Figure 1: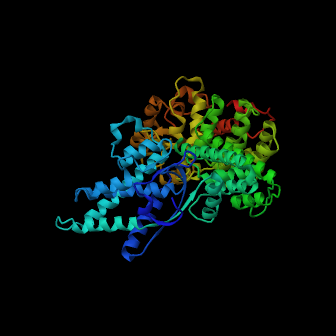
Figure 2 (figure 1 turned 120 degrees about the horizontal axis):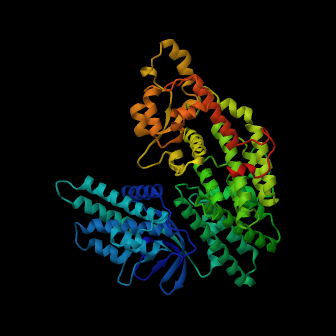
Length: 628
């Protein structure tokens, strides 16, 4: 295929077939890019002007078959659009739609475009071939790229249906079929800049020049392009075999990275932006760390390029590129393994699950990446890694959750710590000691108790922070369950309130609404209201019970509490357990300030033990806190 500016119909002809190489990323267009394409096409229809659709970079694989080095997203999307156009046109004019399919989609010798990996069959059969989802269960293995392909198909289906409804008047389809004809003609005339290459080295050179300045590539894609171009510049032409080998290694590493990104998006609903992950890696990789107002990681790609361009020794640059891409792959792999809980050690798995559920991990991802790599290669034992995770969880709970400091708190301290782990081989003991210092500095026991013993704890955890309060109460419930069999609450369902059948709510034992209490207005104002939102008055409860009895006096709710499978409700209603709190003068149906204060002290004692600050209490050995 000759290079140069070509129209779409000159490229997608019966003479050529196209394949996406395995090292490219899967289909990634979202609704935003689809909307842009649809809007651009209709703008050029109205203006009757040519439209530049972008750059496509091919490498001839065999006679008539080309690998798409760059541009696969545009070509795949246009195939989907044309297929939906053909289906709609065929409904009104027999043969028109089939003609489009025979030319652009699937001529007699097979499909024009073949995607990579898991998308290959799905694209041909489900997106272009019309196979219904339920007709082949082997297609049920959903992936993010399959979902995006399916959404692209649905997007164009919807757009053509909307146009159909808009343009067909009194059953006459002529205006709609004319529109389809106009759209097809504009697609035929779309202009593309074609580059055809014979080697990977040539592809790298062109790809870097064409794409490095574009805005649509992610930083990760720009990084891949830049580093491969640095290899091209650094390895002499006489060593073409080495260049091809190095380029293939880098391509394969980025292919792995793209797969980790896609898989991470499926794990536990926690998708991280790929550029964020690369920035987290830069934080632990950059040995020119500064604590300036504008740290280097905020412009990590710019600083990465400056560092490599400053290397004058070609061999050194090649070595650094290979080491960087290997480390980058390890960091993306670490995020995937952390999010998917990929460990055989129960202690590590449960602590990772707790951290992911608790959230507020932005400041800790560099540390989690660096320490996971140490754990994965055996430098950190499972016990040491679990102990480190415990300390991270304690910091997040005490500083961000209980005392609600801003999420900027401690950021640079933990970024420093993550680099010490990764670059300076900081031991687990040393890392735990550093985190303990930060726990004590930002939230010692005195500060923690000041916030937890606040009379308005319920509102202290605002409407968007009730997950944090359920997290606290879950572990108090777990502590009460310690001697019981069959834990009744699932951790993630409880904290995220995500159970399909039971909503977990925060119960006010002394009711929030005092209308059913036998209290004067003065008692409500001076006694009830100042104490109803205290920690000692709060418990977990399922909404089905709470909704019917939440405003009743304690004596009326007590039978429900005793019958509940939630231990903290049993505890406040069971006469024997109440007597253990140190008072025999209460009536069995009594609940008020005295009971709230005693229960609050009991809960806060548990909290200090469960999420300890060793520097506020007696010194403890490294992993003593880890056994909780």
